[in-house]
Image 1 (cartoon, rainbow, N blue to C red):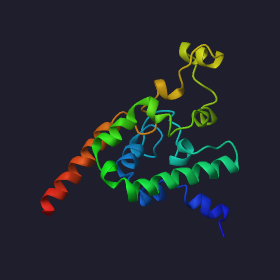
Image 2: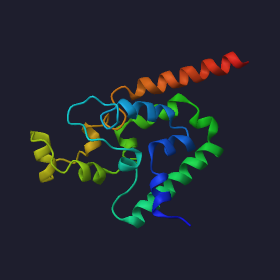
Image 3: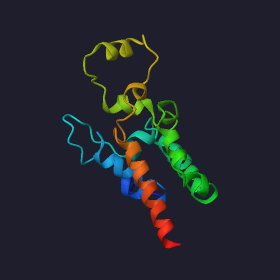
Image 4: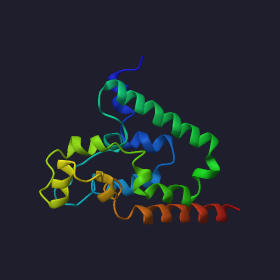
Length: 164
């Protein structure tokens, strides 16, 4: 039986990295602004599901969880060569692409009291079309996410070359 406990267990960052190719994302998140090792003042702690699943209601949460899981399992088994390349992941750093994997309303859910500044005021009034990710693209995994990806794929390549 699928229970609330199982839903909670499968929503942890540890579960996320156990199932698919998310090691560099996990490492970057740990030290990024939302991660548990962040030393950024006033940072809001968030896990994978806080940003990457729809929290509108239980049905939308489960639907987004199932869709993400199917996509990841499909990628693991049928796109192994594609997802094993650095460029595949670097492409996802583009804020326009990142929006496919992050829900704007989740940013607002946790950050409903935005700091006072000109851009946030324009955003609140609907005067700009930018989303949170257009300005804060680095938040989920930190400024150094690209470095983590490059290091991860470099180590992976070295490991493969040494095993030959």
